[in-house]
Image (cartoon, rainbow, N blue to C red; front, side, top):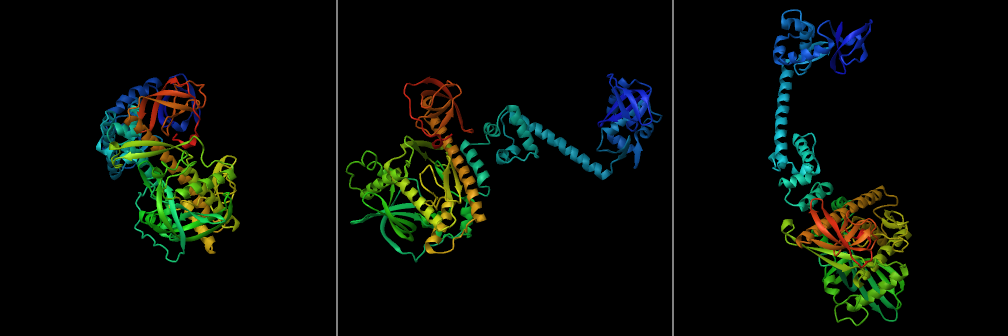
Length: 633
């Protein structure tokens, strides 16, 4: 005797070896013996053999139409054996009964299971809805097949094109369009960006990178709400100095300016003047909310996203020819450039001029500062500040700029809205020039002095600390070992960084004797510090990515086939005259830092953005190794 039984959601047949009350020992057609529960047995039969029952019943079940069965069955539960008897008009043979069972089981839309071998026909309304859903899925599957075929042929179906941004940045994997697109990516071996680019959905790699950044950091867009820019304070005392700023040509958020007043018989009074948006932007105001959300200005070649609205920046930037509100630090310096005393105040400062690097450096540079400078505005002040900066650097015992490091300036020529039509110019300048040192040292003095003042007054502040080689933000006035100062707080860029604006609020409150906006151990201050650190790092990473993109565009633009490079470590090399690091797998594995080599450009992928370089040969001349954190990696 044989049995048909249910196991693991399917049907199996076997020969009875032992029949007990609650269980059976059966031998499967494969020869395997199993113990099954009697409750799982659906049918006992003598013929055909267990090996042939399902083999003969399956094609017979395929001939039975589910909708005809549904029409035939009355309401209420029924057994498959009873229905098989009605269907065939006689007591069904084992193959016939099994065929009906298989047909009922294969049509769950039409028949709902109610127990061992028992079913109930689906109500008409539920069946209609289920059939409509099945038809929808069938049409969906046909559409997906069509989309897949089009994508594999690198043609863009309109339904896929409408979801370009979502497919790149936030794919909804429940959508059939996404399923078809990801299948096409898998079958073509291309990334989402590469496939969309080949299909023409992405017109520019620049927009790919820029939109991804906006999706991650500015999901609501980069526009500012309609907020009125606060006016200038009218009750500030006016400083009796003529200050000047020093910035590159593209700087519009001018945060800092300097002044020198000669004190006969004493020395000089050096002024460090910082733009004071903290006088107008109140903590907790809508403008504070804007700055708190952005946390920093975002920089990239040819473009930037400012932390504050343009109207606010224009009101508080230290523009030439204007009396500007500022927080000033005055240093009384003797003839040997020692700081005798210092004082801080909030005042109006007249900005006599905005000096630009490209105008000043031709006559004020490492070669000219040792001799007589030409008769230029502020030449005497610049020379005096440079001598003071050298003295400050000596007292700290740390250089203000790593020697041998280059800065790179990107000039994008053309309309950035159409990046494919733009060209890029990359200029290289040595860091550590007299102008660089002058500005860097005076900002270090300001940030360290004001950080110390707030620490002395026990006023909360956001510090930059470096201990054991690790730089981090903290609310404790810890040393910054890399700069050689006992404490260091960013305060000199309040138009561009939220932590500087926060610290300026605290400093202004201290100078005016008011309660500071953030008390010690403020949870809000800790939250702002954490968010600033994460966001500032993300912005910096995006800036490096866009610089890398424009470096690759520069290689394409100049049709560079070969270029020289310097080994940083192992097979990681820095290309000459570009802030671009590349890994060269074909280079010898035993290269030493500083070795020079020639590379050929094999392939440039702007979507990556990546470049494949091949090793050509070693050069004889070794070069000093620059710090890796100062170039795009």
